[in-house]
Image (cartoon, rainbow, N blue to C red):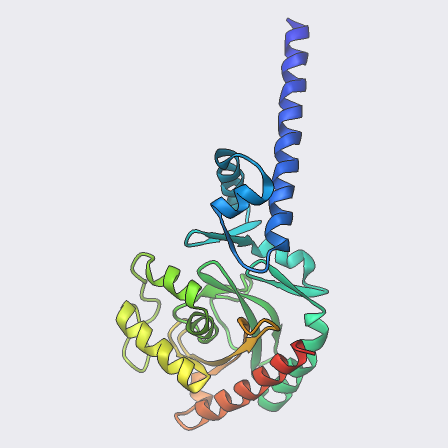
Length: 271
């Protein structure tokens, strides 16, 4: 009996090691890709069977190492956290040296506004805040401690949705959106696909996205897109401020400052 048990344990260990190696290979495959990959692309690139690839992608997704958007897979936020000191991972693509290039512009924006400055990247159907600058008067938000928020009711999320057609298509095909607050200019968070698409078109036209107490009561935000060397949107720069301190006239001025900073960062990343 002991021999059989030992043999079974060795077989289980070999199987686990094989799965670990295959999982690592899938992560390396996704990290090396310039674009998100679907199941068939990962299966062909790694040479694993489709069944094995699908199973391992599911496991990696559950552990936060892989993110799925629609039918496409990218390296997930937990892997992005590991490379953040040198650069950020954006939809599976790491931008080497991006932190060093971006931080001076974020600091300049904070000094100009004295409000909370956020840098966000897409992670599935959420925004992940990879950098935040703030003082003692930081506005409180449900994203505090989590550094994550929904796409559709945040300024940064709207910017990312507006400028990424693939992400937008997958997101609008998802289940109905949930109202987060009722204290907005329109009386509620935008949850209808048609209304959201109209707002996203306005974001593209103006180059700035706004959230007026849609995610957090008492908080207004302005955000603008940052484009990577390939011309695609890769990040969003946002400023969050108390709604009482940002009137009808002040919010566009905040938006202009954010848009200017985003353009500066886009230029810095292209060097």
